[in-house]
Amino acid sequence: MKEPLQVSESEKWHFEQGPVRPPSEARSLLLRVSRHCPWNRCTFCPLYKGKAFSLRSVEDIRRDIDVVARHLDTLRERLAGDRLDASVLALWRDHLPAAERAPFWAAALWLSGGLESVFLQDADGLIAGPVQLRAILDHLRKTFPWPFRVTAYARSKTVLRYRPEDLLALRQAGLSRLHIGLESGCDTVLRQVCKGASRAEHIMAGRRVRQAGIELSAYVMPGLGGRNLSERHARDSASALCAIDPEFIRLRTLAIPGGVPLAQEWLSGRFELCDSRELARELLLFLQSLDAAHGELVSDHALNLFEDLSGRLPKDLPRLRSMVEAFLVLPDERRCLYLVGRRGGVLRGLADLQDPGRQAAAAAICRKLGATPDNVEEICRLLMQRLI
Image (cartoon, rainbow, N blue to C red; front, side):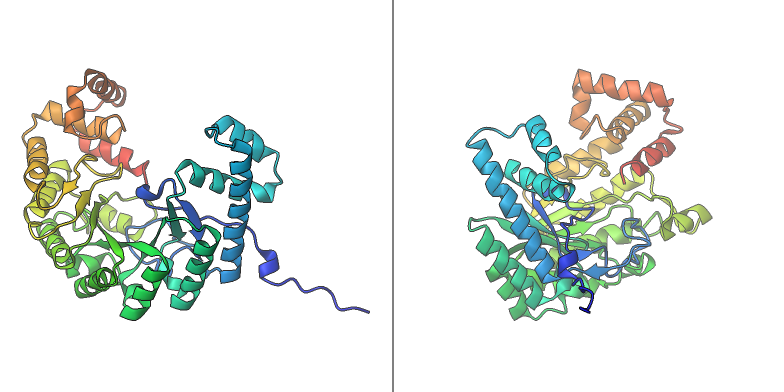
């Protein structure tokens, strides 16, 4: 009698995409290189808690690429120059077998974004190793032979496992940009939130990425030091970023969801959250300490106090500082209106308060929630939790 057929891992393949990507990669093709986070100990991050890390095989990722390519060819043939229509796409998708719907939608989203970028998921795109990553990049470029950028999240510790020549080879194979969460340049803050990397390691890794010719998008988290370490967090983060001088500095303001270790520290009183004025003063000090940076400051996230706090460094620093200073001198009622409008999603920055329609929408949210200068901080904290 014949032996039962043994199903290999590659035969169990199905198309996968992970849960997260940067806002700048909203129209990218998302390729899942690994599942979840290899570190997963940061006290502020809820995303991968309780989920086991694993690597996907190069063969499975190649299959992901191939199935997207097949659907992309079909879409181009069917559309024949017509614009993408969401209702038509949904109709086409719903007539596909269940296993084909996710890659079809991934191809359609990528096509709608101009086929300009591929993002390697999940939390650390470099964790697969240089040989495996090179094989993935080679297959990407062979399958899609037009110019596009390839980006990924990475941890500083993982970057430091790569030799400079390995990073250079990946850049030559098409790796364009890495997104690294420094979160802070203050060693005390980094230890308290279990980031798993020191200030010196962040600086060394950032410089290594830049020396390889790979663009670096470095993240800092306003508020992460709490009240006690706010000033040190601001100064040390700015000085670390000046030492690295990345192409992009991105702000991601702290919000504390339930179920993470930092929530327990906050509830017990061991960690004190900054209120909006304290957060603004921290931002102002951060901006006052960034004179040696030359990249773009980007505030592209709903959690940030100002989503329009963006500009070229150091040229735009006076303008950026004046935006924060304007918030700090707002009368209490005006500040309450702005905060609720901002956290309620109808305002991006202070300039939007000059728009009668947006101002009216913010006032309506204030009335609905019963927001006053006395309770606005708590209301906004709850609104921010919904955005995580």
